[in-house]
Image 1 (cartoon, rainbow, N blue to C red):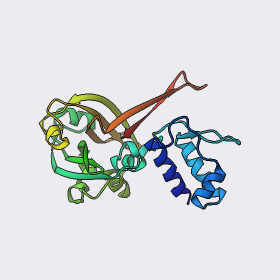
Image 2: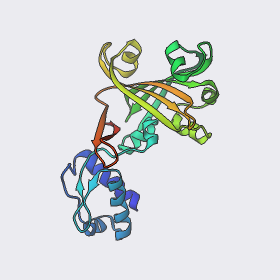
Image 3: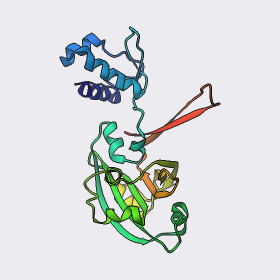
Image 4: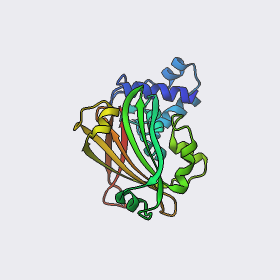
Length: 246
C-alpha cells in the first residue's frame, strides 16, 4: 500500500498537479483517499522526503520541494531505472554489437592495450515509444563477452551485468553538448548538426579498474541534468547531480 500511495504522489508532483511549494493533503485525507491506515501513508511520505520531493513534518503538512526525485547510484548507470523513477516506459533497440579493437581514446580510458579486443555496442533507447537516447558502449572483453549472446532488447544492461556479479562500483560522468552526426540523426530523428546532450561515463570496479566506457547522446527535449550544491560543516561545498528524463 505504501508503494501505491508513494507512486501516485510522485505522479502528481511530476505532472505539476502538485507544484513546487504546494502542500500535500493531510495524513487523514490521504488515509481516506487510499483507504489506508496511517502506517502506509507515513511510509510513503517518508520515502518522498528521502527522495527530496517533499519537506516538512512535526505536525506541519508536507510541502513539495522538487519535481525530480533524487536518484540512487544505479539510475546513473541504467536508463531503464531512471525512466521508471520518473514514471516513463523505457524501451530499446539494439543496432549492432561486436567484439573488436577499439580506437586509442577508448583504449586509453579503459586502460587496455591498443590492440586488445573489447565488446562494443550501439543501442537506441526509447521513452514511451519515442527515440530518446543513443548509447555507444564499450566493455572490457571479460565483462562484455556475455552480452554477445544476451537479448539486449529485453531491458537494462546494468541489471544483466549486476545479476552476474559484475562489480559496478563507481562511475565518473561528464556532460557536454555535441552536434548530431549522421548516425545520431537517423536514429534519434533529429537533423544533422542538431545539439544533443552527451554523457560520457567511465565505470570502474571497487578496485578502481575500468570496466565500461560509454558515450550516450540524448535528445535535449528528453533529458536535462540538475546539479544541487550545498554547504556543510565539513566541507566548503559539496554537490550532487541528477539526470531527469522528461
